[in-house]
Amino acid sequence: MREVGLDADVKDLRGFYIQSAICEHQLNWEKHIVIEACINRNGNTAPPRVIQACTKSLDRKILQGNERFFLFANRAAAYFAQGDKQHALGDYNEAVKSAPRNADLYYNRGVFYAAQSDDDAALRDFDTVIGINSKLVRKLLRCGANEATCPCVSTTTKVP
Image (tube, rainbow, N blue to C red; front, side, top):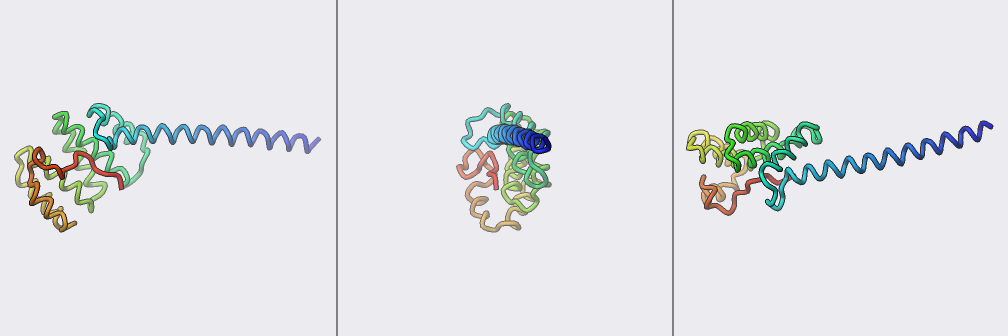
């Protein structure tokens, strides 16, 4: 009798494990979809959808620690594209706080400041860019702060 009980327990455990694995796979797929919408790799996702996806990813704490920087950076770019300067700046600041050695974040925030005619803040960020990665001097010289005429400026930050 005991073997029958043990065999039934093993079957229950297998069923639980399989169901758990299916649920985990589904959850990971849903996370992937949301993060991909936030990243907007191809640039075809509308800013409101990017903002929604990034917010959902941040609220659910899908990523932890400094891995979250690109969620803030991409949401900032979407807010900026919509003309929501206050939220854009808040997210650029959070991105920089999350990854303070990422020169691209300072560059993007510097472009934002320059677009707001805040030259002092833009120059501080561009100086920080040079301090972190002097190879980006060419990018700064070539593009300056005029994002509209610069093909080298990305509106999103690439995932590490």
